[in-house]
Length: 422
Ligand SMILES: [Zn+2]
Image: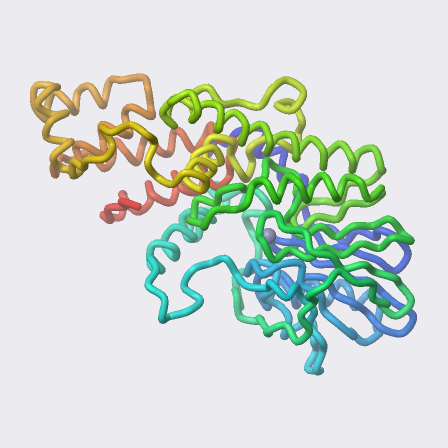
């Protein structure tokens, strides 16, 4: 099974490791999709984030317990995404441990409230697709932000509601280690970062990781506030951080390095926003904006801005939808053709379904081939295997882990006889 060489190399960012950041302070990387951190105080321990499953949390706790046997006095959650909050029952070790989080703490995942109408099944299916659940290890080599292979037992099972909501930025004493908790909206609006000013260590949650930021997650997500995320990165860059500890991937060490990764990521977000806004102002279609969109020299070559997780073109579409909504300003798109009607028109133009199948089979433009396969499938023509083959070919050269997973996942569904439309 082939894979993009940069994506293969990126797995070094998530190899299993317990890293000592300073005496008594550790981070666990590669044991789960996300990272988990331990701060050892004079007589107690503080845990920051808890991973996505009880099994991963157990494995991490076992490692931490080899380094300290002091009781765990508190858990701090950087934000409400499920890959960070689902191991609290393990880290509390049967005790009533305070759990601190932002007063804005609320998952941005839909489906939390059963009384609210939402496409919950679509979200579930697309989450499986994004993370490649059920794929073989050589297909799912990476999540973009974490290792492809990790424990799945107790996924999402160990969540406990926060007991202490922090509504104002504040200093707290972690049993001899001074920490500042402050709100830092970014990948989610409920982010609260943990800053150790004496040690110059920052636990930044998912506001930075070693990949292009996931401004839009293909599982489906409400608009993430691009402007707020960029401003937060600017504020964090001004903190004089010497060790940046992200919610995914390995820490960044050295004040200059930290400043560079934070400021360049901020610039990348602003570039996507500005380029998209300029294109929309000029009346360009999103397809045309995306076709030309790339990071400028000076940013494009930064290893941490490669599109292992987020993607600039998806971000541009999300920015457009998040600012002006779905309508692109072209009145053609005020009307609707169903997939079948459009497919019939395209087939007529091609001179029939057989002729269209021949074009789809022979074109060297794989994106075009996928689009033609969709027309054929809409008309009941047997293009499923051609589409599956094409997605697998694209997956093998794709740098983005979530796109790779989606291509392989959807191909597997087609081969099993399911039609995947979303
Ligand atoms: Zn995360």
